[in-house]
Length: 287
Length: 344
Image 1 (tube, chains in turn red, brown):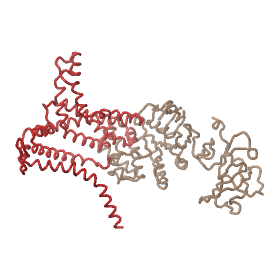
Image 2: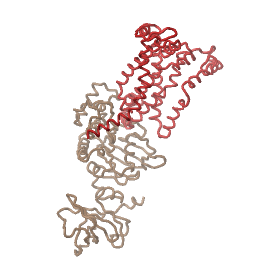
Image 3: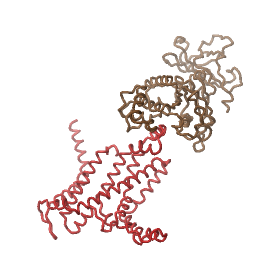
Image 4: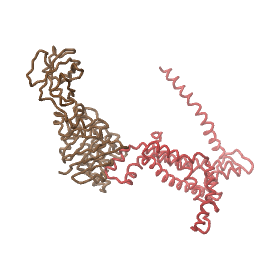
């Protein structure tokens, strides 16, 4: 008996081995290297192995860092707000207003259509639309609504948040839709029976019962926005910066240890946020 | 009287299919009414139309002589108890019960006091702070009942309230429902597919089939004189027989029924008086059912007749498998079906 169960245990370890190796090689090892390099010294053309805290000291006392973090949090908060509003509405419509499973599936597939192309292409396609001589501005001017082209449309916070919302709303829709589909429809009827209005039903029944979906969606959106730099680079036009852009700039200047230190701090920030969010939801119940 | 319900030519169409087909029904206030029928007969749809959870395709619904066909559930003054109870899983029992008052705009202290009183009524005071998921089926049902009663409805609608319980608990909750209904003097409309449940509870039983009312009345009247072949078969305890040359009082009816407990089994050589119909049959099966014996016999033309034989009338020598016997019944015990109903 004992031998058999030991053999069984051994088999389980064998089965888990490939994934463990992959994670060690492609996740743990790179992060460890970044962690080590973040303590190294550097000059303009070489990395010097060392153990010093200068990188962190500079990073944590620089006003540029503070600005970049504030910007990142601002993007994250705004994106979260808009993706949540849109995502909740879309999921609610899909889950409660579409009667047949067929239209539900069809509309769900339509929601995923933007994902048929890459992030970069989807972002770049905004540029001819929002630019100074873009479609929106020329329409507004031709119709006489504005005299000058609106400059906030592109290379601005507006453009960055717009792109984020466009890219990430589906990450909010899917988990919320998933938890809404598990809500017993009789609960809605019971609330109607008690006299609840549409708004009261959403507030008292649907929001509390899709809470875990909302939190899972928020986790997706937060981590994606916090770690992003491409969107800010393209849509911010190099004027706007977030933490990702800061790291990107340091890498292009070959300041690898400084970039590594920034990366570690960003990782820690995101991890702290995730710990807080995961406290609010039992993720295993959702899978 | 308050709490009377009236349906006038009420119809429900689903994609052209008549789920409920123009039914007329009057339920007096303060009565316990059971809608009885097999699944798919339209009884739940009827209940949901009375509750206001299902739009009426045609016809009217009157509560207290007030036309409520287009009103919302709360405006009607009805309250529904759902089949799987539909308690809000994220709210405590107290909050579940108080929800209707919260919607009505009552303050927290006030509505919690009312909810605690209601929990007291269903003897669930000790569970006020528990979540529904922590309760057993019977306990959840009491909470659901308390929630339905909190807004002082005149009519309480129960959709198969006992079907999720085990048989022992079902009988107990049945008694509690009935006594609560009597105590509060409310109209209860209760949907069930169990004739036993309906007969035990109802002042007024409505037997439905295929979107129509087959028969309505006191359970005892229905049992004594089922109006159609369907009713006789559905409520059980009746033999539905087709007449032929050897057996039949008159040839006017296509079929008739005779109660299984009004048949006697006699030896072949007994000559009955002429108030009694005599038929020869072969015993196919004998089952002991505690209070009585269930005896299945077959007539010579192949029809099956069942008899409920009281234990003290059981004659082991006569009633055994394969025995030829004579079935006797009083001619007055024959129940003729309503021909207009059967040929509708």
